[in-house]
Image (cartoon, rainbow, N blue to C red; front, top):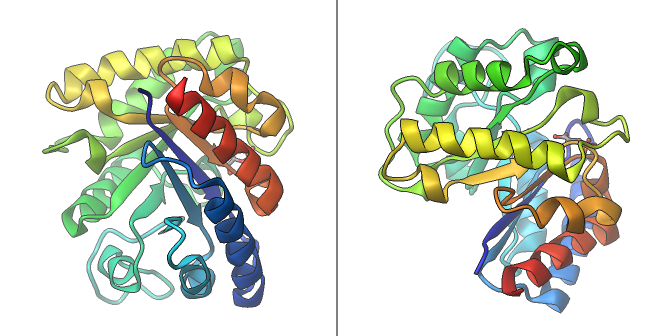
Length: 258
Ligand code: PEP
């Protein structure tokens, strides 16, 4: 039996009122679908919309996470949010190292390593993102780039169980572009990630969730999620519509029992 995590990254979309409406619509579809416990559903709104989303998904089983965090528990870091604050409001997961954070906010593997450890310390599951740019893929550097992001970003991380950490493989050239990796391209990188995770975490790597992200939508979900080392998706655009997000959850639900 396969397990999946379907996660929506709402990016800088939704006011609290919008998040309430979208959260409610997602919860309604989740209640209608009632996927088994083998499929987890997660939404990651902007910080200020987390509370509204949480209030509106209550009782549906939909989890709520954040898109970023600081690595310190408190202090003079104007504009930042600490992992313990996310925990206090009810977040279960936090996205760390999304390529937009790496690209527009100069977040390095060393910084992201601190964030991963800080989230783990609070008992929040980091969704650590890795992925190559188009130039890196064209220069045949994909596996090396992803390997370095994992080795440096997960330096000195120790895990008791596979469920404490999630990896998202997101080819940068496929994010928000409408261009998706083929299922074969995704599987090739996911298999390489799996093999490295087994080396880094001999007790957990085999069972860790590796999500695919990059223009995942209802039309390509079945093909990509069917691949053996793909355990779900991190979804941007298609997560902002309750119907398309629910269709991807439904695909995972079908594959989880097939
Ligand atoms: C993302 O934001 O992580 C993402 C994969 O976006 P999109 O699905 O829109 O490509």
